[in-house]
Length: 316
Image (tube, rainbow, N blue to C red):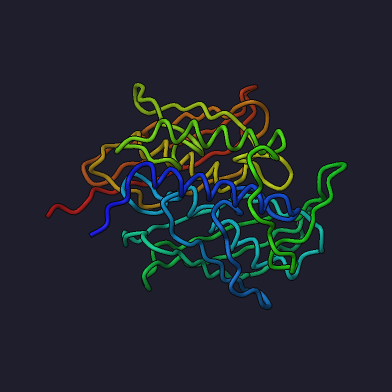
């Protein structure tokens, strides 16, 4: 039996970050998506199938796929299901996303199948409704749904085709001496996260968030904003903010409980120097807990509100 060392894991993670940086040099997606190596297996009509390959770079401390990686996959698949019926070059903003977990282990490659339910009528902003299923090792691990609105890109920003809309192959990973300033910032965040890895907190948790601090009735967390968590227009990627909220909420309840569902409402873009996260337990029973989480900018602007349900693990 071969044992992978910490140094080998670190080298593999660093190489994956460099591949993500290389992919991000092609306008279209964002660094988190290239880092996860999102692959569009099918986009047709009103449906989409996307997969995230397994790897040490995206696993949590329990060896399962990190919640933020799952949320990026779900968010991307749900949005893709509506893009064929959306104006080319338009921006899709997530308004709400919900994920209901089945309790199955989230190990190995994870595939998301999503389809469009329809569009709103009589609304000032066109709103699309989508739903999907995430599967691993042939079993459903999560059911997801989302709501999106179509917006114009920010002034001065032109959105390029996504990877499934383009035949451009990603370039080879650049030499570290050839990195631009934002790319050096990504690699610096990677190295800082690698230095903090423990048996209780994996690389990806430190890279995309951090370890929440326990306070009375909940947890808090401050997340520095950088290009490693940015979306196509420079704001914090929605799946990452979703994952940060879920992780902070999970830290607010006993470890004997598992995450059952997350419902999140997106209020305004995550921007500035940092995100401030506060989770408060609003109900703590023997079998069920409910946590409310708020994410704001450093200036106090509301970014996201989430409610999570947690259930007691079955005793052996």
